[in-house]
Image (cartoon, rainbow, N blue to C red):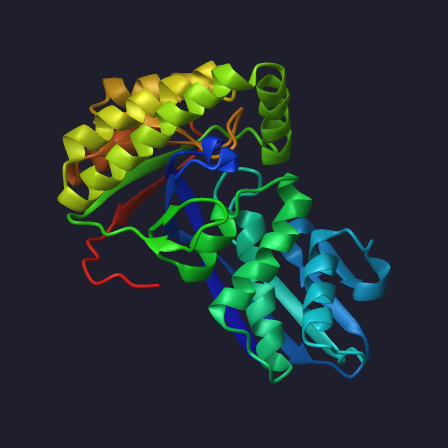
Length: 315
């Protein structure tokens, strides 16, 4: 029997613009996790058990483009496994689906790790990340690669599409509250809608993406220097641009405004938008009351997460 576990993730800055080559900042969320256990069976074939999505079936019965089928078959191909082992892959996850917390990436990563170890060929992180990105394309169409990167390495990262992964140094711990609208929103759809806007008016949207890129760079410096007040201001500025990009929603805007009224230093949507989650930067002592304010304002779930200082962070 082999097992693997991986955290969720949240984007702090730069979502959507990251698809167009601008930087983004993201951190792992360890309060929610996915796990996979692979064990031998006597019935033959590769069986998949995923109770969170009410799925129990043999691999051959899944469509080839199903994300679970795709990740398993991609691993067999990468390891040149011609004869499939008789095994059962059991998957559990507490990461909300379609909420911007990296659920799909986390499931891919834990399957790749647990199954490759079961086969006696454990994959290095770099290869896990590469294969997980290919599966992300099924979820999101044209992903940036940030989800799989943060989940694979489980460290805060500064990310630019197509560039080497860079750790983000956290000079001083800071706390965020994540508020879930309870509305499932597929990143693939919001990314596709923005793509149409960009294709119709590329010069305008490139300027917007450049503004976001500058915000991300300034946010990185603020995180490195522990300047939480500046970090909150930058969150507010990033959210305003995301609203302009039409990826926010009435529900997200309401939670963002409620967070600010409840004492947040800054707040914004996170991830694909049009549902899913928002985040608020808050002092540790106000985190619980702010989370309660978000629930009163309509959040279906809140998560308090502290990003610890990591001067020695390396990937």
